[in-house]
Image (cartoon, rainbow over all chains, first blue to last red; front, side, top):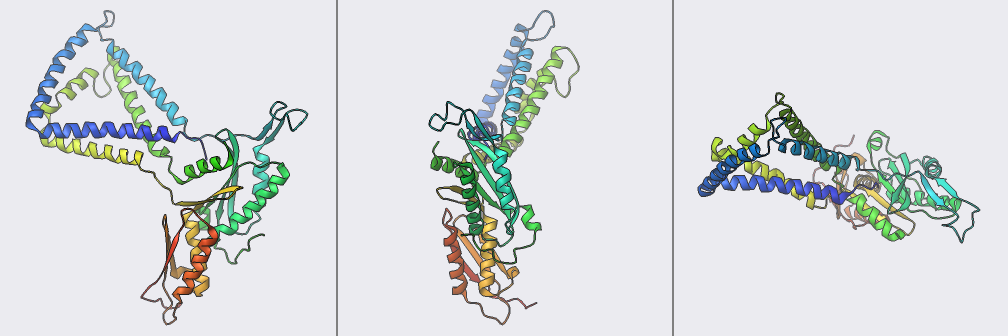
Length: 212
Length: 193
């Protein structure tokens, strides 16, 4: 439930793919058609001649080298920085506070000042309740910001054979109890997984009755 | 954002791949390529010896491609590059659905791994048929759940009964997209342990 920019990921992959597709297909087709191959050769020769003129024309007096090299190096540096930012922009979205109330945001609910409830309060309370369920091998609760709203993610690994419905009802009850403690409802996502812990753990031996 | 809209957004993200691994891998490749080009440019600028190829030589080699390589080689290389590009385009465009099912109530949103659904169905079938769970294989797809039962030799299995039990359980799960079940009784039995 992070806030990775998925559209950007897909657009980046699409652009990369289209460039390879166009270059590969272009080269293959040009090489396959004799007239096009001749055209390609003459174009290469033209560019080759022109490029030496360009290199001569852009040579700097002090270093005897073309300033195009400086431009290439600078462009590479800028692109590298952008790509590194892109890579480290993946994931994220974790926040610490679950509820933040300032005197201004809670005019109708006077608190006498600011109130901040740390996400870990909810995380520990809910996780403690979940670990008592015999069908749950392991669980983790975390707080994320989704579209500007703090939300809780409850992720559980269940034992083999456990009904996801029973686990879900159990977690829903836990969440309802938590709502009563918190005094308000925050969005909750429940992930029921069969992770590595599930494969190693023993299968459930008894049916776990749903808590009504 | 209202809670239903929030849940729709969360559930869509939970059931589709973010394509992060591929995007990061491509970015790393590009970083390495740009770092190399940049380094070669600076070395050439300072008159130092090249790492692999000097920029001027690289340009000349690229321009000489149609002369230096046989057309067949260019065609083969071009096709390979184009196919890699095509795969990337498809990965970018296809939904990349994860093997998960969802369900949402007014209070919470749930994503369930298909493996969890499969093992729960296997246990239900195993109890109803009074058969070892190892003799049951459940495959859960996007819209179908196939329960295949290998009976113990000499003991008949009631297909309709298992079918009902599995169906009942799937109804209780209330998953989206809805799973339809098929129970298959294998022709060959298994010698009882």
